[in-house]
Length: 511
Image 1 (cartoon, rainbow, N blue to C red):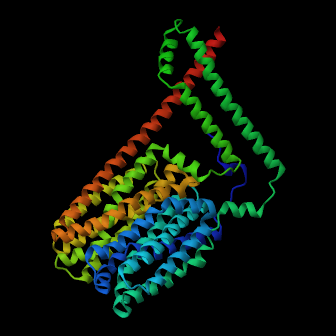
Image 2 (cartoon, rainbow, N blue to C red):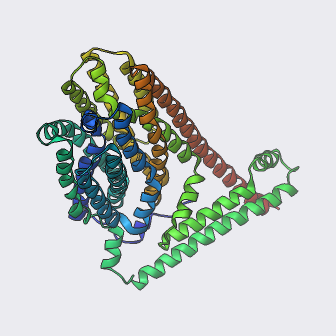
Image 3 (cartoon, rainbow, N blue to C red):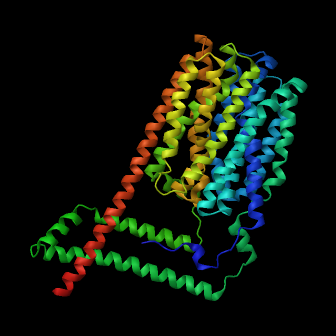
């Protein structure tokens, strides 16, 4: 038994407002500038080594800390977005990221760069990603929202296509520090853009601060009616249990139903319906969950927990490709320009991958968790190939192959999370995913760099990464299994309780 959607209590808008489309465009711009640069920072790997005369592990520390902090503070960023809204969080993130890149111009060592890029830029980027995703989710609902959130994430792929060539050109003309200073100017464009990310619900509330009395009375009557239905349903279950205990020997049907009902934990079902009723009433009344309450609800969602752990395992392992892709091509006897071409192909094909989750979810026959499972399996195979291949053609083919699942991984951060937890808990859900990924990203880069320095090749690091990604696919499969079992259990339980209710009524009438 479900409540009708909140929007059914007020007139629906016939079309999407211009402001909503501006939110979508600026959110795409944020993805292109921010995510495109973050995942193209591997193009600066060699420049960092040359500028500061450091080793591979030292240069990898910048990107590793950048990824670790960006993801690691995800729970904090999610809480900030929930508490202050997408507008304020996006404004703060764009200012912080711009400041980090400006200060990078004055870097005198790798440690200085670790602070300005790895901490300040990463903190700003974390807020920008979550705030832009939530802003789009708030302005677009249903299937349209899922498609546009996928399209928004495709902006990062477009930025990833352009940044390697832009950074190479800027590095040749102005050096590493000059390139970072110019990129900070791009980030500053997000400061005014984020001022558009005002919640649609808040705009409606501010436009009509006083709710019409008739609408208020109608809402109260609806809540009272639903409350009575819940209470009547629970009482009917209790009544049926009493009747079935007395008349269990009368007919074979009552014995069969008695055995079915006793197999169900009635107390837990009552509690579940009670909690659901309270949650629905709170939603109708507009009561917002606290950060602690939201995280508690996420922790008791086993499907989301398995999905989050799977992302925390698989995604950091994929991230080492973007840290070492230039050095990987150089080890294979290829040039830096060819490495930039490989990175271009990864981001080019990632655009199509980012669109896949939103398109797939238009169909009710394919589970949302099938996307990360497919992405993890393809990524694992492609990374095994990169560990052994030396020729340019096959390396470029593998870059194309790995780009598609990489785009899927980026998109499922927001799209799959929205499907699993809903818009109210989306910011904290993405924050949890970011934090778990930060823990892995903080280890993946330095460990892979040390293995490369000690063994002289990337074979072992990439094979280990492929195995870790495959382990992530197993966790996604477990999440899918739990989700399907939960749906089956709810459907079966509802059917049995409804059958028991009808039998109890008929038995009571005959008696």
